[in-house]
Image (cartoon, rainbow, N blue to C red):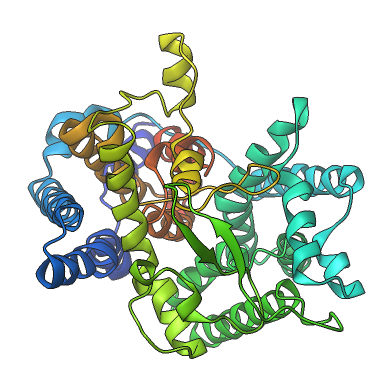
Length: 440
């Protein structure tokens, strides 16, 4: 009995041999992303025009990157929070958890599809044009009212973390249901015709297979991702319609200036985008895509800062844009994402459009420099907790949320994006390792 307990204690105390991807790649995603999407474009904009809003984005992005690197390398969080990282873990059968998550998710999507006025994917196959598809995409989930508002939150948590986690667990254990669950998950993601959603399902799998050096499966997952995004893009742009839309749609900019907002279409015309939102002067599709990837994130952050100066008079929300904080303060929630979008473009008919931005911009508008420090510290703690966890699948499943922090607020990722579940699992649960199984 003594030998049994000693071996078990030794197995729990032994540090796990973390992969190179976990030790180096995951921690580098956020600082590299901030530099590419925000620091570099802000620096170029400031040098070219001396824009004070560009200098603010430049300063915030650079400081948060340096702060992140300092916190990660110094391991201050480990020194102060090691008692949290070292909570006693409960062993659970992850495959059973994955089956339950999948069952609940598919019931959720069945109810959502049954109660929706129409389903965007089916409408696209029928040949509806892009304008009609835009309406059905809003009413499918985002425009729900009453108790059905919770459907959007459940869907967001499921697609961002719970279902990718379940799929990875099933593939790690070679479950006979793994292919069926993955393909069904991809199909439900395509129902909304949101082009990037297949990345949520497939990037964690790509990370998992790459980490295991199963490059054949990683290649299959990569090509499946490309094919799914291509098919969804074709349908979302009215590709089946007899007369697909090729022109932009004029809208009223929230700040009071007339401009044009391009709707999703087979051919986008870059000059119809306001000049300040366009880093190229050409009209090619390649320039349009590069502009959306490498400039729109920065210029959106720029507009958040402009909104703070012109609408908020340089003040801060002090957390009132976070639902739980607003409730605790007894005040109405300030929906910054929708307010900033309205400030830029005006709203759509269902008032559901929003302007996302990097976590540090949202942190700054909420709590100023203190918010940037606290949010960065929380991110470091979450990532460290994930890497220290012996639930290896969590490392694959945090990959996409870390990328999403470049374009979304931290609170949204925690409460709506499923990071809360990741933290909960990493804190209190553990997979059964072969060594611990032998000691039972």
